[in-house]
Image (cartoon, rainbow, N blue to C red; front, side, top):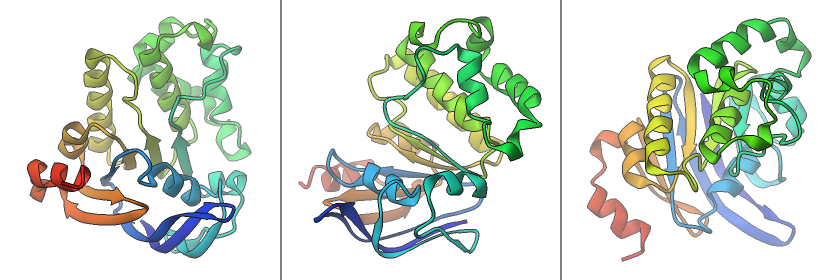
Length: 233
């Protein structure tokens, strides 16, 4: 579904990604793991058009995304849930969700998608009139995920969803990811909790120093070997 080929990208004169290639299959959950500074978030930003691509190509269902502005990428049915939630704290929960369906092609189905969001995340229904800034970290992450789903994306990209959350909330979060996967959604998950990420994934990529150093089916991944590579032991 998504093909990244020999990608180089970075910030100004500083290149971060070096010939990164990966494939994301339709209906699969692909996890990208690696230590801080490995280039994971930079890769997501390049895919979403948030930073320019210096070399290589990104295609979604055969459509080349290189050079496409981020606001146009949303029209090809791809959504990113960024690290740090980035919800609109001064707006209500329901207003945050409606913003997720701002693009004209999604507005006709706002009511249906709100109901789906509230069914998947019942706590958001209970608090839908509250300001988003009043939510706990776990609730804010649920809101960010629900907002991403409001645009009915073919490809959902999730960056570090468990960051800073209590273990009980992380458990709930990964249950939701498993449910989304069971629905047949195509997901890219960037996550530092290697055991949980591998456990929910179909395919695993490990990044180190801006490069992919391991690409393997999740069912074949040996965690001890993965951790040796992760920590460069």
